[in-house]
Amino acid sequence: MRGALIRGLTVCHNETYVSEETIVRFRDDEDFDGTPELGCYLYCIFREKNFWINSRNELHLTKALEIVPVDFEQQALKMGLKCLKVKGDDNCARALWYHNCWKKSSPAHYFLI
Image (cartoon, rainbow, N blue to C red):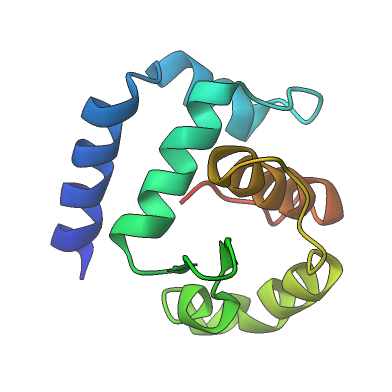
């Protein structure tokens, strides 16, 4: 599974041209809400991992939770429940919204996919 994730990250990085600095800053800086390119990168990852429901333009939360480590499942569920009413005009903005919501709902437990 790790190999598939790495391939997805490479595909998405090449597709969106998001900088590594933007990814790291988003992960590490609670006040940085990201960029449109980062949103497209995150959407691409969701899409590559088959976590995106195209017909509803939203994350398939149950599928996304499949990659969460067992000792983090309860916290991830709480974060997910706080972030059910997705906002955004397109899939890139929606993917970024999910990550911002998770980051703000539990900064100590947030990790970037």
